[in-house]
Length: 139
Length: 439
Image 1 (tube, rainbow over the protein chains, first blue to last red):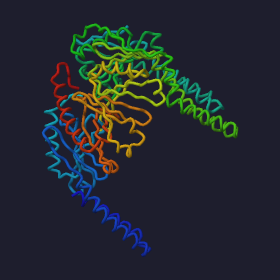
Image 2 (cartoon, rainbow over the protein chains, first blue to last red):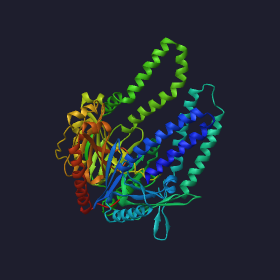
Image 3 (cartoon, one colour):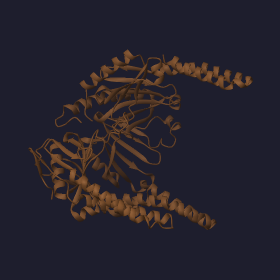
Image 4 (spheres, rainbow over the protein chains, first blue to last red):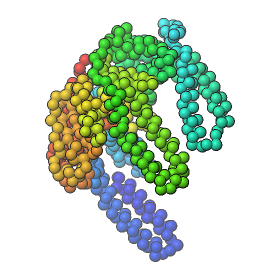
């Protein structure tokens, strides 16, 4: 889902570039070729980035993994969650996706799960909220 | 001096009647400084604006008087109630269980009139609760009852006695400021200015007019450090760590022990020959308005400058020191962190994690495992090539964490697993211990 999202964005950019450059044909061809190359490579990179995302619900904590170049893994205990946020940006709404974000009292905890199906997002949100309440610990 | 007002069973109290005057006088002095600066920076005087300024102070005084009239507070033994606002009425309640620290702040004028401001820091609140001003005796009594109830005692319990730990002599404080980064910047600027003055005096005058404001800012910063940390004393008491400091105004802070999220010692390179360090403590603090920023922690200084030995003795009062072995990362990490490798070291046991980082400034963080919010493992491209990774232990706040930097991958993986389990154990132990109110 996420791949499609970014791929289409890139394609739109190429089309826009073509329209802008429609006056000069050679320039248009060059820009078009570069754009196509960008699309092809971005599909590859986006796919890699997409594969790097992952989350795992364990008994006591949530694991979130992401990143290709810089690999990050966050372990967030349910008891430390302050709030769970479900957002859906413009692009995400276009494709019917949602992002679940977890907040702890620490600014760097950094647990975000993008590109979820709305049902899965809602399920995750409810589950996290319930678990967070059950295992809540003070500051 | 406070006037009790009864409404029902509640005994509301007002702030000290001199409050608006003192606030006005403080604002006026700030304005005078501002005026002096503007006079200096633009020679063709702004004398006529003085009336406007006076009028402004007059209006502000009226506003503050009204504010004083509509503000009242009441402490019922569990919660502190504060009501304020004329047009937009605001009622705030501060549950004592959530108190992070209580400060008694007395500006110079406050000393003259025997009044003080009480600042109460609460986790998750928008800002500090400020009661400005109360009579000094009333403020002290209120602080005592707030802290007593915070620890589950009767509100009428008198303030417990304290055990002094350390005091910072003025000479040492002065030297520490001389050897600080700000001073280096100041010296560099002055030298640069001197050089320009000898090469071309014209450019120097142009620069001087421009730079005077900046210099003034730098001076104020240095002065503020001296002023706020003069006469620094630390003491422990059953209700928390007490810090007293201040030259012109004075501040008395009380930090309940279990509110401490993390401790940190900072050793700038210029202090190294004297074996000095600064000891700071982090509290879970003020929630920023934007969601998700976490609650940026509030840093309080426990020792502005002192020997590492002294810092260690104060530290051991807050978090138990049990001889955790700190190990350096593998030697190949030197390629990734050539400037900080000599400082890197980290270790943990089942209650605390200690990590040292920093290039010129050596920073050591002590993080109790029951305060850890999340565990993170981060590996950049260089680190992957070297087969190392960094493990962060995040604590409530923006800039605090204990980082096990550039550890061997297998060790990093094991750390993530071990620390997750140990933090959970520490947390559940902390929750079952008596007197650990949730906040």
